[in-house]
Amino acid sequence: MNCKEEEMWDSEQEAAIPEDYEYVPRGDHFITRTIKRLCGDDDSTVFVRMTKNGRYRRAKGYFAPGEIVAEAKRLKTETEEKRQVQREKAAAHREKQERRYAEEFRNRISKIYPSLPAEDAAVVADRACEVGSDRVGRTKQLELDEKVRLAVAADRKSVV
Image 1 (cartoon, rainbow, N blue to C red):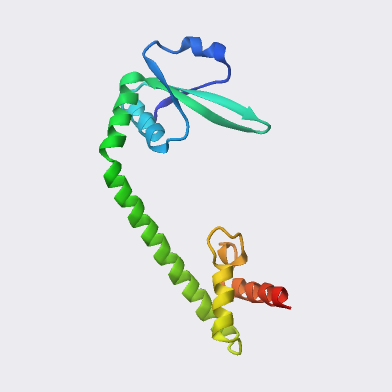
Image 2: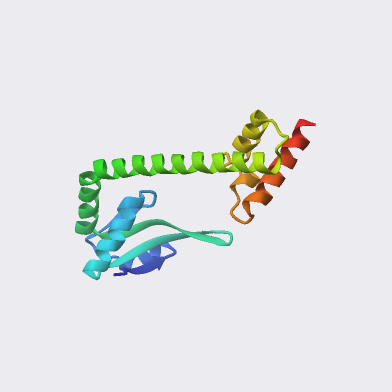
């Protein structure tokens, strides 16, 4: 169920917030998601303090009923171990996927460029597939063969 959100742009609007509401700054995703979910279940309104920088607008914080904020904080501490285990499992899964993708990239390099030494293919694949590098190996917009060709060409230009 969706919660009702009411945006506030200046401090004068905060006068309309009920007394029992508590301010929660943005940044803790678990708390804000839980508050919104609980407010939706309770049919309460969440007031969102907004800011606008240029063309972009974003939430600075939230006002929600105090008992809901307390419940969200209780749930956070209660589920911390379980969520930590989930984060570790997800990180291991992502690492496994990245290794598998880099290996596939290496194999495709060897298939397309059989005369390229295996050590060079590994260097090209590792560089092109580095997470967060914004290199061609990370794009989802090209087919694997095209990514391989571009990565090998870029690596050859940087070596020469």
